[in-house]
Image 1 (cartoon, rainbow, N blue to C red):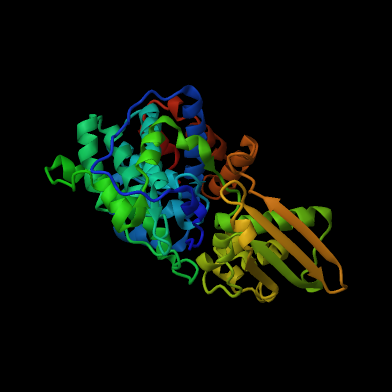
Image 2 (image 1 turned 90 degrees about the horizontal axis):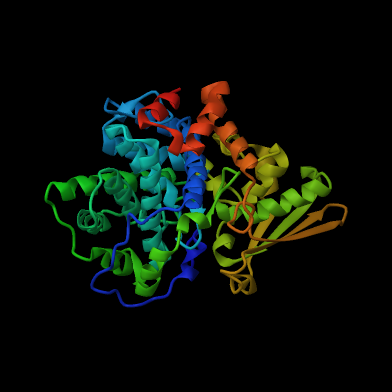
Length: 450
């Protein structure tokens, strides 16, 4: 079985865990990797500032941001572990953060949330912050690529704790031995997450990344205090406890690749697995308008993990973001799939719900067999006058082989930042996009204070 919104399990091979794993961090980072990482950082900061406007995030910040280090995107401060938590929560609240197919999840938000909290505490350079984000991204991704997550688990909050700890260790200038100790300890601080929570309306899913970022930072603190983790615990925890297997060869090979270059980025505020059907609708709409009242039925055929996102009557905003029927319906009715399309009022909209009830989603085993090389979605639109319109899409815009133009990502950043920062959004984009040019992290946090 595949987990909802987690098609990545097909990338991994089951093998017995080795006694230990080698650790390769602090390798030279090529300029083109740093440049792409700047784009990932800017995109993640867009997700964070948008998430800070969500009611639940504001409520938790009001309760727990009682002083400490600055929160990026909020007029508040919190102790570093809580800052990491609140940043990770904000970064996933609007379902806008990046992801990585080979890694099997969303490495950036876990590493970046922890790195931002640590950077605020020590006021490092923007270059050091970017280096830490890259090292955290790579460390977490290597583990995600090597493990096979249990089918019922969601990838958020699991191996991301490794990326968070690695990012913090980087900013503290730890040597490989100290970093290993911190990562061994972090391995035991990941979460047991539920993939079905979001489908059933449980916004606890948004907490997973924040908790892992917090625990990753704490892991480095604990290791420095003398608390020890399980020696060689990474393949044990992620291969046998949270996961079902460990591919030692894949882990070792991961040291020679840059996972961050294989990221995917989203322009819509919904689960990646909804966006094949969403693109098919976009293509049909580009040909001719679709009147909701004229729709007789919409039939979607896709691979297994995407087919699980089939709820036609979502009970909460997060369930709408993880529903192909609702995502397709809200695009047709409201004209978009941005943050407001999944607000509580939008989820309850009668016209959208009526159209979503006409959308069926089916699994086609032949399409699942085409993974991981191809991620296929077929959509059939039936109109009341008997007209049928079809589209098949392979992959999704923003995938590594179909990257968004940088101008589109800049526009996404504007949409996320402008409501809180007005015309300053363009200045913020430049700082986030090119952190190597930022002398001190304090300037970044000051600029991103509403």
